[in-house]
Image 1 (spheres, rainbow, N blue to C red):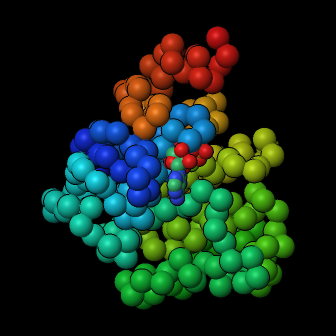
Image 2 (image 1 turned 90 degrees about the vertical axis):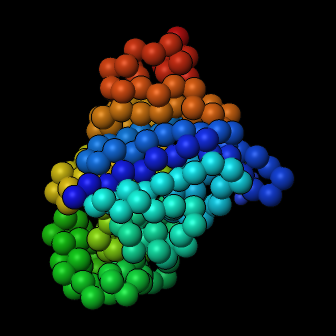
Amino acid sequence: MAVKITVQELHAGYGAVQVLHGISIEVRDGETLALLGTNGNGKSTLMKCLIGDVRPNLGQITLEIDGVRLDLAQLSTNQIVDFGISIVPEGRRLFPQLTVEENLQLGAYRKAARAKISENLDYCYDAFSILKEKRHQPAGSMSGGQQQMLAIARALMSSPRILLVDEPSVGLAPIMVSQAIAKIGELKERFGLTVVMAEQNFQEAMRIADRGYVLVHGEIALAAETAAELKNSDLIQQLYLGT
Ligand SMILES: Nc1ncnc2c1ncn2[C@@H]1O[C@H](COP(=O)(O)OP(=O)(O)OP(=O)(O)O)[C@@H](O)[C@H]1O
Ligand SMILES: [Mg+2]
């Protein structure tokens, strides 16, 4: 029972704006993969391609799940979610006036997920005690860190096998960034997830990443097989570590 995503020579963008120029990456079963790169280099666009929000102009995205091969670029976002991919979008995109629990329920909008809604709510409340405590409060009344936890929990409501997390650190105080990253690591183990995380905060991402890719101007500038290879690369030193 394994999952894998293979992206080959992917070109994508927004209308006339080309953002990704021939991206090839692999997402392997059970790993935590970091998509690194500074502002505006295409991390979110790549994530959006994986969830069917942005359509490739060229290239292939293949999802292999338990021996079945699917052309992901031909699937709707709903179908992609049903096959087990879920996203925590950049900026969280919660419904601030709705309660914590209502936001979680919206994560289970697909038929398959609705059948398991109370089971998954229990899992989420077990994993995030703060959400249980605040379940009847408006999502917008919580702190940024708590809202990020809610966004992650909402993504778990569709029982994903692959969790895409886009910039969990954005807008959070350093201590909350650490907590959010640690939580993602913990959830990965607990639910046996495969995680793809886009993150500008290199040091925090590397606390849980097994390996990673660095995007520069919509191309893969570095594909590193280990965390150490990333840390020691000249590119990372230049981009993040100021040397
Ligand atoms: N909806 C859109 N329409 C047009 N251009 C867009 C749109 N969204 C993003 N872009 C452009 O695509 C490029 C890549 O953006 P993207 O959001 O993928 O980068 P990113 O690596 O996720 O950056 P960040 O770290 O700031 O989140 C940028 O130049 C951005 O301005
Ligand atoms: Mg982004």
